[in-house]
Amino acid sequence: MEGNTYLLRGRTRRAMLCGARKLAAALCTMAALCLPVALAAQQVSVTTGVDVLDDSRVTNTGDLDFGKVLPGPGGGSISVAPDGDVAVAVGLVAIGATSPASFNLTRDIGVDFLTYQAPLISDTIEIAHADDPSITMTVRNFTTDFNRTITLFGLFTLPAYYFQTSYDFRVGGTLDVDANQLAGEYSGTFTVIIDHE
Image 1 (cartoon, rainbow, N blue to C red):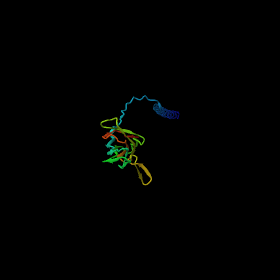
Image 2 (spheres, helix red, strand yellow):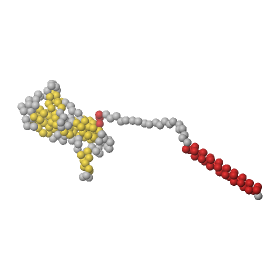
Image 3 (cartoon, one colour):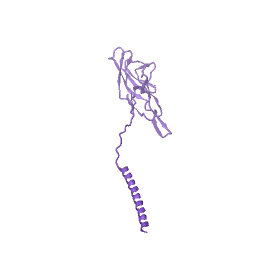
Image 4 (cartoon, helix red, strand yellow):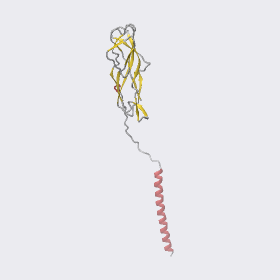
């Protein structure tokens, strides 16, 4: 009987030892998972880029033209509106075709939000005589139709360019002509500034 009991105890001990070894091995495995492990350095390639824009996004498609004027003894002014309407002050005779300056710009829908910066009503430029640049006339009161709008469903007002990748706009102005202005051709330049936000 004692032999049987001994063997039974021996089996029990061996079973317990075997179970203890498995538990110890499991605990060692878990401990190994919790220990910090030194990782090998890794390299990752990253691409970088930039789009460089040029001035061709806004192009001049037509000049501001006041036509031909006959100043007379009192001088006067002539105004060309963005829509092409012409107003001539008393004392000045206008002859020939006139036109506002015209422009085209390209943009990305949903990306470029545009603001017209110049020229403004308060800006002035001088145009000079072709043969004697010291003789000038003043162009002032610049106006534009850039800020046209569209209304959707009678609820939302958006810039007219909002759904367009190509947008046309015009700039007009007023020319002051002095009394007995020297005859000849006069010319000058002005800068249109559009902010792409």
